Each structure stands twice: as structure tokens, then as C-alpha cells.
Image (cartoon, helix red, strand yellow):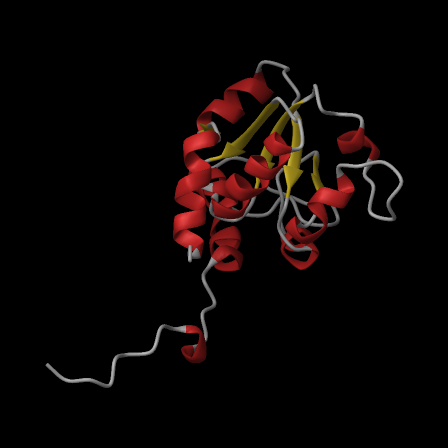
Length: 159
């Protein structure tokens, strides 16, 4: 049985990652890959990279195909397009890019370190209204919000 970290590690063997500064250079040079944010809509609503589109990870496969309620035409027609997959920290995006490659997308990469790394590199982020989000405010929005019950239980067996 594989756990989440093992799934990500296996996908990393097959998926190319780019650093935030690499994406920044591409965009600054006028190169415009499709920026695909696979976070949940509530995360995307709070902040995102300008000109990115949101397709949550849970509906990605159907969004990449024609004739589904979730079809996103840019994806369904974009198997030859250059695509950068984005999430909060770079794990969901690696898994999404891996699935997309299996579906025939040939020019898909994952943004290493995700939106967090993008913000750490002090690149622009916007909110749902298109307003700039300050880096410190973005840091607060991107913090982990683990609740106590989500943490791994401490073993009850003594040494």
C-alpha cells in the first residue's frame, strides 16, 4: 500500500518541475503557458497567480475530456499546449501533471514549491477581484491549518 508521500515521490520520477523563478522568466519574456491551478475553489478565490485558471484536482480528468459537464475547453483541446500545473506547495500539482501525462498531455510541468514558493520569490498574486495580494497577507493565507485531530497519533506503546 502506498501513502501520499510515496505517490508524490513516484510521480516526481515521471514529472518535470520548474522553479518559480523559471516561470517568472518565461512570463516576463512574453511566453504564456496555460497556468492550471488545481487547488480547491476556496483556495483559488483567496489568491492566485494572475491569468491562471482553476480546475480542482478532483475533477481534473473529466475537465481534460470533451463531453463532460466539467469539460474545460482549454484543456480538452490542449494536449499539445504548454501547461504549468500549480497548487499550494507542489504536491497536488505533481500528481495532477502525472495523470495529465498519462492522458496524453506532452508539455505539462509542475511548479515546484507551488504558490508558496511563488510568494516566497515575491512574485505577483491576486485575489478573486483581481487586486494584488501583499506577500505578508499571502503568507498568512498559505499557512498550514492542521487541526489536532489531523495529526498522526502518538504511539501508546512505551519503550
